[in-house]
Length: 172
Image (cartoon, rainbow, N blue to C red; front, side, top):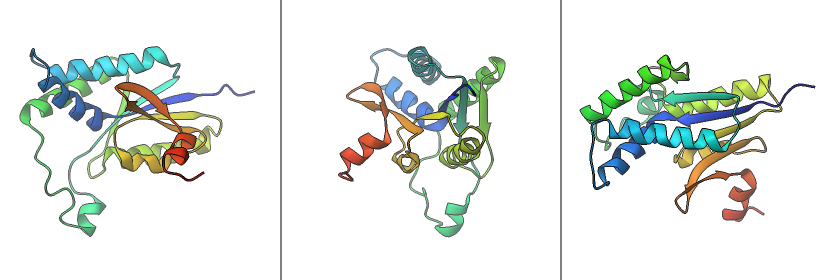
């Protein structure tokens, strides 16, 4: 019998941005605040669950196929603040030094990497469970029997399943 593997996949840019802007609303400040909140969330999720595999996915920058199809794609988005860019680089260095895998490919967004990673690994580990930590609603399309989303519901990180999605959007 093969042991069931549990994967935690973190949408790194999504968590970093939300950490950065959440930290700015706090009544105190410190250099590297986004790093502090990013790590606090990751540690909290890891403490509550038993994952055998952890990977963080980051946007790779550059151009991607969506921009080729629609030049206005994300054109209204502001450039990443320099302070946040520096914290992103620090997080990647920290992940490397602590042997936590991360993937970042030029011309690919994190959600594309997440979908590709899951597609490849569900073939290799058909009994595995994949939990994706993100606030990106685009990733809801990946929900299945073995693929869940960890998201904030009423201020708490909650496992959101395919069944909950069906119920919430009246597919039952």
